[in-house]
Amino acid sequence: MQFTFAHNNFNVFDLEKSLAFYKDALQLTEVRRYAPPDGSFVIVFLGDGKMSHQLELTWLRDRKEPYNLGDNEFHLAFKVDDFAAAHALHEKMGCICLENKGMGIYFIHDPDDYWLEIIPQKR
Image (cartoon, rainbow, N blue to C red; front, side):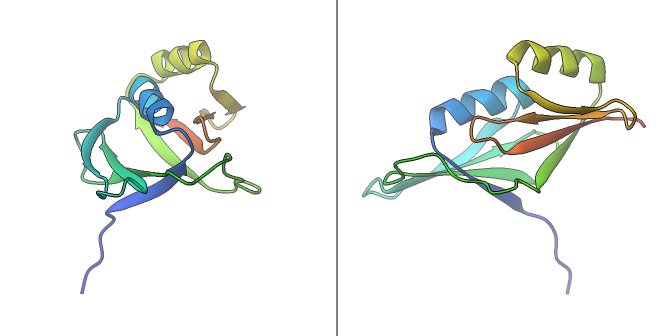
C-alpha cells in the first residue's frame, strides 16, 4: 500500500478574488471545477502545470463572513526559481506578511489570510 499527496483545501470567501490572487502571485491555473446544480458551493482545483499536487479552493454560497483561521499555524510552501523577482512581485502586490532574511524565506498571505511560504529553488 502506498499513499501519495493529491491536494490541499482552502475554503475561500470570495472565489474570484482568490483565483485572481493565486494566478497573479503564484501563477497557479484552474485545472478543473465542480459546481452542483443547486449552486450551493463551487470547488476549483489549481495547479502549477508541473506537479500533480493541486490546491483546492472551496467557495460556499451560504457563507456570510470571512473565515476565522485561528492562530493560522499552518501554511503551504512554494519553491521559486527567481527568488528576487518573486519577492519584488509580492512586495508590489503588498502581500508579504513575514520575512525571515536569516533563513532566506518569506511568507505571503492570500485574500483569506492563508499563509504561503516562498522558498528559493536552491538553498
